Amino acid sequence: MKILVAMEVTEKHKTLIEAAAGTNTVVYADVQGPVSALVKPQDLADAEVIIGNVKPSLLQQAKQLRWLQLNSAGANTYCGDGILPAGTLLTNATGAYGLALAEHMLAQLLAMMKRLYAYYDNQKQALWRDEGPVTSLYGATAVIVGYGDIGSQLGRRLQALGTHVIGIRRRSVTPAQGTDEMALITDLDRQLARADIVASCLPDTPETYHLYDAARFGKMKKGAWFLNIGRGSNVVQQDLCAAVTSGHLAGAAVDVTDPEPLPAADPLWRTEGIYITPHISGGYHVTATHDAIVRIAVDNLKAYINGKPLQNEVDFTTGYKK
Image 1: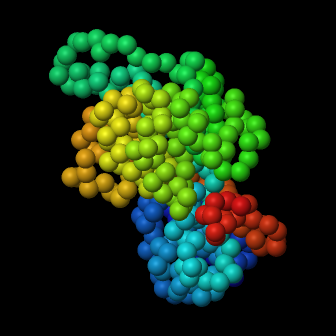
Image 2: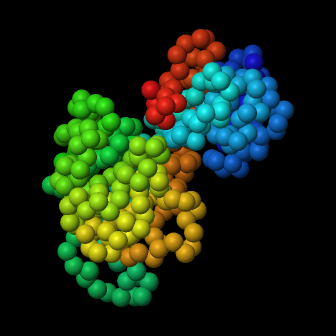
Image 3: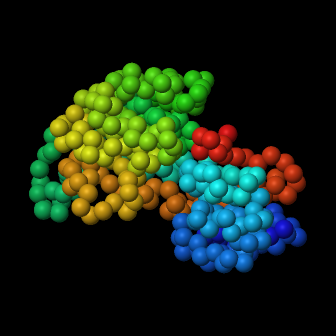
């Protein structure tokens, strides 16, 4: 069996992968960063297992493929008809990104609430000026939309700082760690009206496309803060700009946009009160994230070789982990 590794790995990671592979053949693609792998056609043609996000357009060349392990949590671009050979197992890296993304969201949120962006602008002008009142996480209510690994990591951190946390899920309202309440996505509008902070951790699916539009921003409490760490397609960006410009929202921080990269002419760049990072909260910026992705892949490789169920198998219909 050939195992093609199409993600960036360290020598330590290679040792773990090769130990799990045993006598099976492991080959490594020429990788430049977390989302760019140069894969040789001959390696695709006879690989039974691929670890890493090979471009979907190339996967029909992988005639022997039986299992694709993604290094991302998002899987939607691999779920369409005909992208993977029939019968291929698809697993993602859910569980690897929560720590890094939650810390990133918390940093963005506190920077807005404490007016740190304004003070940094003042610093560049050598301007000593009080920017006025700030808001606190203590006693605030946060609605976290998409309460999986990433959402729960954020919820635990916010709760520890005195925030009342409401988690939103598609199917289950079973109490979850880091929440004070749980609600279904069908109850989203009612919960948004309670929120001082709305944090979106949703994937890109047909159900989440443009979930946040003018009507939904209008249902949020005046003065609320909005965070998007999920996918840019979840948001109607011109409606977000309008909600912040009007003062209905106190501010917004986004690590994802639609499209990416965001064109220089897009109004999102120039809307005062919106703060953008270029989809860098995940990736391999935190070593623990990279290690966790490889750990998931290695554990699944051992399971695959031994004929056992794999963790994080993706439902092709929903794009979510089963």
